Every structure is written in structure tokens, then in C-alpha cells.
Length: 278
Image (cartoon, rainbow, N blue to C red; front, side, top):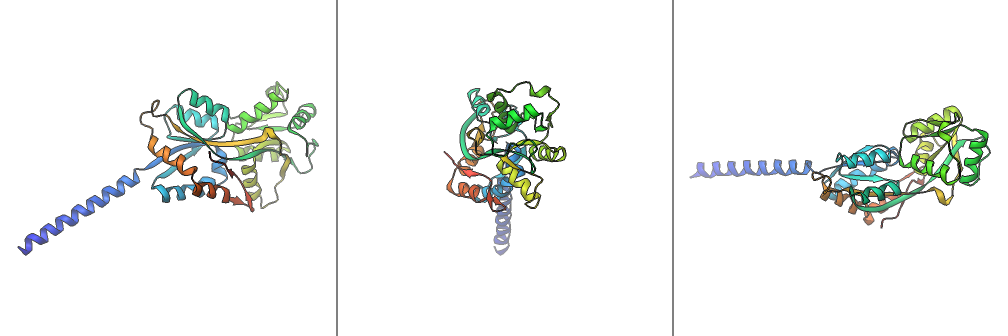
């Protein structure tokens, strides 16, 4: 009888171990794949938020940082479950075409035009329209990402809105085809100007120990507002997309805890993003 109970206990212990391993495996399976813009990655924001998200939900967040245009393509191709991007026009079209659902505004910062400290073009303090016209008239080196990112889309829209066309044929207009920090470095090497979001500028400033060769010269214009939103990839278009996990991520990002974490994320004592979930 004693031997029977011992065997039974061993069997129960084995079952508990198997159940535990199964639970661990199930937890490990909760992985959310996200495509996002380079600014949320380069700044370190996602490195700060991902552990908090996992602690709150048990879901591991993995991401690829690319331009918004590429991120939307990854969504269309069903390669990811959720998007965190900053090109409102393209995002709304993505939703209208049936590829995205639950688009939710989460945070914002603004774009700035940065250039050499000595400002050879003389654009410091000017409005965006004035600054762009100076670049075109004086043929001042301007570095564009040229990668269909949210920043690139906004930059092209600014040239159009301010009546300047044909810049892609001009030798002073350089398309790097690279991410934002790489483009900033090219601008620094060539003594040129570029457009970036404030969060990435602060990261660049922090990397340069608070003394960067390029500084903000044009800012505060209404045309430079930069909204970030998340949206789930539509399960109707991508049946294997993990919609439930994507929905949890969007809800968590809009929660008071995550919104506070976004607002508290700073470099050099400066906030990189302002939370505005709605």
C-alpha cells in the first residue's frame, strides 16, 4: 500500500512538472510582432516600454524598426501583428483599404529643421516656408531620408505645400536612403541641414554629450506636428495575425500607466514624446 502511494505521488509530481512546463511554453508563445518607425526604436523608448508591457500582460514585444512606408508594407504582407507609426494620411488609407483596425492615437512630438551651429543659410527662427525657400534659392545642402518613412513623407509634403518642386533633380538635395540618425550624421559631415523629429534630435544630442555639431534652427511651426498611432493588422486580411495580442498592446499603450511611462521617458532631462491617447 505504501509503495502504491509513493508511485501515485511520483505520478502526480510528474504531471505537475509537465503542467508547469506547458504553462511556461504557453507563456513563451505570447510573442507580439510589431513594425514601427525608427524614431521609437532609436530613441530607446521601446526598450523602456517593452519590459513594462511584458510585466503587465505576459506578452513579449518584438519589433522591426523601419520607415513608416516599409512598416505599412509589412502589415499588408501579414508579416507583423501590429504597427506603431507616424504618417496619419498613409495610416488612414491603410485602414480604409481594410488592412488595419483599431487605429489609436498614442503620443506626439514635433519635427524640427536642424543644421550647423553657424547657420550658413541664415534660417534660424524662420518659419518652415521661409527656410525651405532659402534652401532652394541658395542651393544649400539638404539631406533627405529618401526612404518613404513618415519623416520623409512629411518633408516632401512641406516642399509641395510651400510651392517648391523639382528638388529631387537638384544636386544640393541629397537623398540618403537611410534612417534618421544616419541621415543626421551625413548632414553633419557635409555641413548641411535636415528634418528630424524632436525625439531623435534629443537622442542625437545625448549621444554627442549635449554638444552636437548640428542644432535645432527651425521649430514651433504648426506644420511640424508629429502624431504617433498604433493599429492592429486586420485579421480579415491576415487570418494568422495575432489580433488579440495586438489589441492588448494598443489598450495597454493607451492606459494611464503606459501614458505616464511615455511622458516620463527623458534624455538630458527632456521629454522625447508627449502622451495623448484617445
